[in-house]
Length: 208
Image (tube, rainbow, N blue to C red; front, side):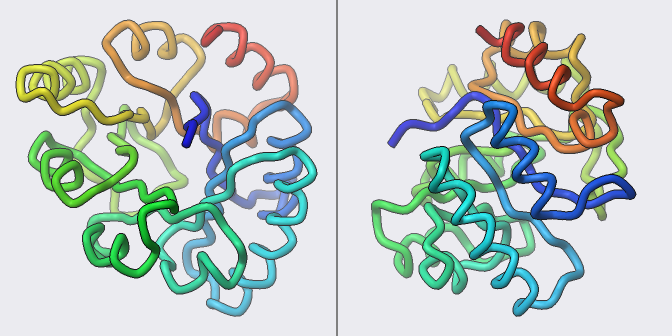
């Protein structure tokens, strides 16, 4: 299982709906999509998820579902991302088996330690700074927070891909990778951009 360096999290705004945001990311070269539709019905998520799965298949892209373990197999997704208030990762692993991707949200080192022991495949660590796309935001980490947590992971021999998430700007990306993050998860950085395709191209160039 190969995890891409950029994960795009679907969102909707005045310019794009959830499906359109995923298609934009795929057309711009991103191959790791997380379907996140907060405050939507499970039927709506299922409907949009099946449409996004078709688009992901066209590009041989990975699709994971936010929160809903029970929709992973129904949609044909590659896995799930679980927040702190969602189903425990160990329980999700029992349901989904070893071949599905399971990611977990973390804000402190102890979160990462638990997810790692419970069999997570990657961590979404954040937020870097304030972001309007996330409700119930955890305490802001900043670059120093990432540095401290990743240092602890190395000390404890916890080797798990960590994605930075939450209010990331292009000028943060080099610093985050130099600290030791595996990848970045982005949403509003792309969707609020005047030229989303150009923004994604610039991000990919920085990472490469």
